[in-house]
Length: 230
View 1 (cartoon, helix red, strand yellow):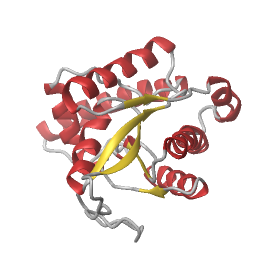
View 2 (view 1 turned 30 degrees about the horizontal axis):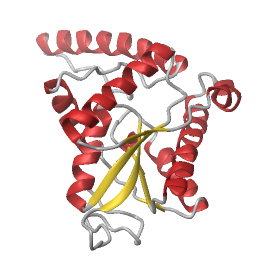
View 3 (view 1 turned 180 degrees about the horizontal axis):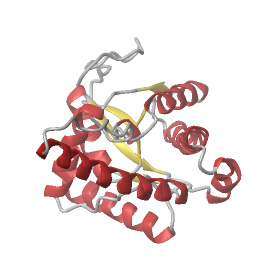
């Protein structure tokens, strides 16, 4: 794990001691593959995650259900972690998030807030003190905006945010999930992200072809697209 926690109440690698063993933590999960490393590393810190599923952004419903079933199967058969299926406020998502359309920053901030608010509500209702999210795994997420959402909402609900930068473990999560044969989606979840991802895949393919041609001809490689993780 790189870096350090900015929240002095839960320093990196120092989960609060609890006589009965690991400390309970509610972990909002966006999908199965992105849950692998957070569960592993949070356990190493001394937490025991319970996964909370609340993702009304995932469209269509068949895709939503497929991702949930993949998560539940891994949680039951491999990770042995409980999964709480919380509310999926699809009407709220259409009202509060969808109007942002392709304004990704505004859309994703509103989406994080909606999902993490439900996660915090469940955490408070179920008696958890600590909350975290698997959204901190993918380099494609808006990391700082997600951090702000989790920290602000957790504190508003009287909870303690456990924010960790899991992005260095993203390649590990890709390898591990493929070895497990898990379904890996190629877009974040909503219809807008699906369209954006399709365009970015096309641009990435064109860049790789151009870069390969430039190398073979001894020319300078064109600049790497910003959306491709380094």
